[in-house]
Length: 332
Length: 294
Image 1: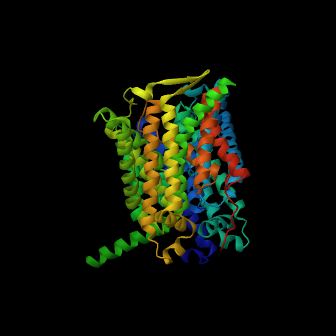
Image 2: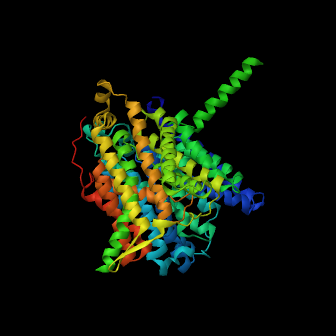
Image 3: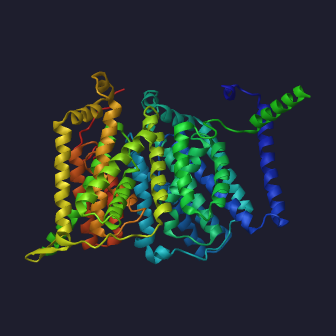
């Protein structure tokens, strides 16, 4: 209940300013390290993977964690963003083309989200899981076979101009996290959470549950489109099979490990899993076995994930540090 | 016309396999409301058990079929006991995630042990390798075998569900779990039995698809598993005859799309059917609209 206690507006501004100052500091430090070549291309590509995974996981968390709708087609939305941005930047290779392609990709992903979400989110139960899975497969076949002239089929598109740098990456990642957490803290977000907790009770309180489910689903699809666009613009190469069922599962594992309903949990687990998969790169089968066991074990022993539905914020960290200091002081 | 009839035969053979799998999905969904993602992988393991029996133990087809059904039945019960039973009171989403975990574990665990390459079944002999022609139509021995075995298994299933005590218990639990428990039915044992039967059918489907397509690999269960689920939804999830009809329908559609259209589109068509069902009649072909009680 502490969050709901009204803090004085001066305090709120102060904490907000502090938050942005920390973010700005992270941005400047990484930028300096990149200029000094301490962060080389290899490390930076890990950074890009982590940031893309953060965007994907936070957006899926909005759908699955906060609204309680199980989606298995996040990679499909990602591929729409990736292909749209790639096709546009291949023709108009400029910053404007990149941003235009990215936004158009995200909007297209959101439109597909409306198209799939409207019929399936009316239903109660797990139909959405299968419908989104099917949708991702249909999108894959669309890019591989139906639109072959445009997308170069199974071989994929290569030589996509690279526009993603640290600045863009930072803006989009932080932007996604901020927008999604603001959404969750708004009245719409609370409506979404109430649908997750008890759909019938929420409807009895006058909440149009289908509307909020679709809203969360489409917002999630939008940000997945952005992540896809960043992916295509950084890694030069995309192919339909990169965005298969396994990619969707990768994202789901991040969300479940971090805690369904915790944005900071998603961020932490995106980082942790990126490190784990870097170590397991040469054993792809073992990695998936570990993911499978991880999912089972989390669900059996800690279904709330690392963070549960709590959030890690600056004030929480400050309290921890104070607590540690006090304890140490007591010993001394 | 002849081409159409020929495709019809192929479609029914393929549909038999989907129907066998769809039965497992529909029974499990009917009883614990879970999309058992691991079901497709039980089918894959059934195909592998059959392969090992026929290649290394040099057993005939029928002993291999029995062994693979028994192994899969035990596997299904084990999965249920380890992964799903502790979550009986958890939210549906966590059981679903566990099911995906089990599926990943089985797929990539198998891949780790047998390597990802495809393997082919030993060449068939006798009746199975023959073809019989009727006019211009060709019946292959293995198609006849698949259709016959499927019909026998379905009849057996109908008998178990309709005529035996445990079948009655299964129907009672799927209708109302709490009331069934109050009537003295052991819910846990009934659920285990449902997994046992469903997994045995998946094992049979696995070995049948092995002799039909003659090629198996550790990820072979993923796509057919999803399609069998679509079949179950098409017929009305939780309804046993619905799953049979759905299985044959999806098999026919797939063969017709490959035969008359582009075989690349067949997966897309199946999922498009799913989305159409969800828009038009979410309760499926044989399903009844149920009112939600608070």
